[in-house]
Length: 66
Image (tube, rainbow, N blue to C red; front, side, top):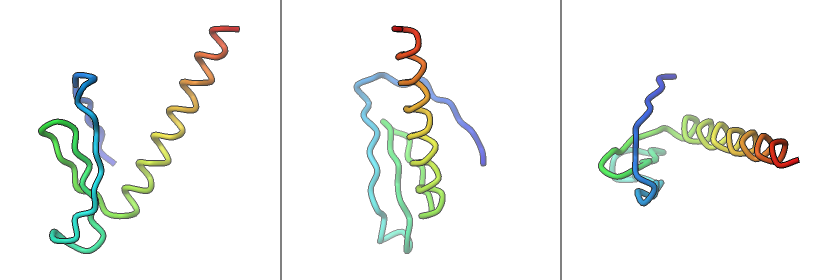
């Protein structure tokens, strides 16, 4: 899987939406003017990876606070 890092302002809220007119099972992830089209498996994997990253950050910030 490719990786891409973009600097973005906090007010650019990411959105995700199904794209039935583009093709069956396509999900569009948009942040500002960037749009990434994912298949269902890719979207599921991204969701899992984001959740893991959030849990890791929460654990690290709780450790730092203790």
